[in-house]
Image (cartoon, rainbow, N blue to C red; front, side, top):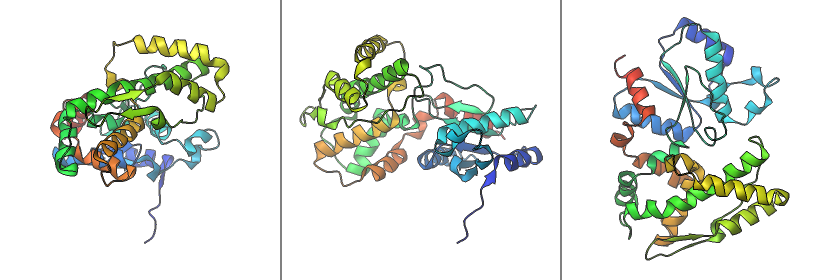
Length: 295
């Protein structure tokens, strides 16, 4: 089968100038595409969901080499290219990216085409009792703990992991590259109660030591302390998507003594279990309905 030729950015601009009625939604990756397509089918919306890696950005690589390996930045760049190319907004095009740390680092980009997830990552739409309960019923067929208990036990660990990384980025700069440090060796799970014990201080020490950041230890620890005291925002804004999927997979696997899934297959299944009736009340999905349901 011949590979489909990717459209260049300049070709996309020409396409939309000729066919502004096209309904296209650009996302970061395959899981995002699968989830958004599920929602569109649920609401009987006719629109195209396009993975950003299906677009050719090579025209921009010389001046913006960071686009070669960063899907999120590609989606943002596309939104900016659309914004600068059309004086009249094309309302049927949407670009969707994860919030990640952007809101806390003043890195949010604003234009007519770009939309951020309601929480830190698209995986967090699974973070609710009805979706987790559906996973227990349809995938695991049984689980010794209620979904409410599971989510309550996960939250402090996930918030700590987010706040530690945020503290590092605030101290060392948003572009600072850090290598993730495996935290599971510092976690113990009570199989009866589901309680998770996580030594955040030891994790910070090992994380900084592994990334040669020990000279900044005191400043990072103080920044982490201050960030952790702020409870004014929705806790789902302070959970990284990949941390959530990895920890909840490990948690289920540990308590069930093997759930029979790989991490990759587990992630795909979680998107299938997301309660679509619940997510349609969030702003991102209200926007999708507003733009496409009546057109």
